[in-house]
Image (cartoon, rainbow, N blue to C red):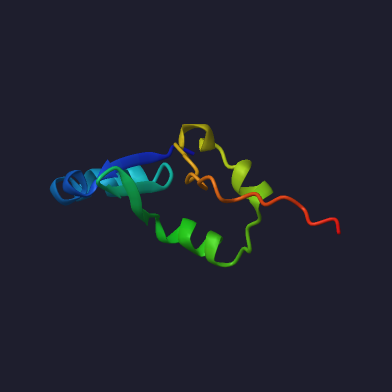
Length: 85
């Protein structure tokens, strides 16, 4: 399985290329560098629709090492000292 990423502008110009790429795996479509849509073949959609995936299944997907992920920053006020009184 190959994961492809395209900007929304690329997708608009090359929808046929996106369809070809979707035959090899999901196509992530981005707006301003952030994924907003995923293009799948109908066969892949039906496979995913019928499954309840958990984090283990998602992390085991082939090609997942190519997906960029940056978790949001939590800020400074996340941790509070425990009240042991």
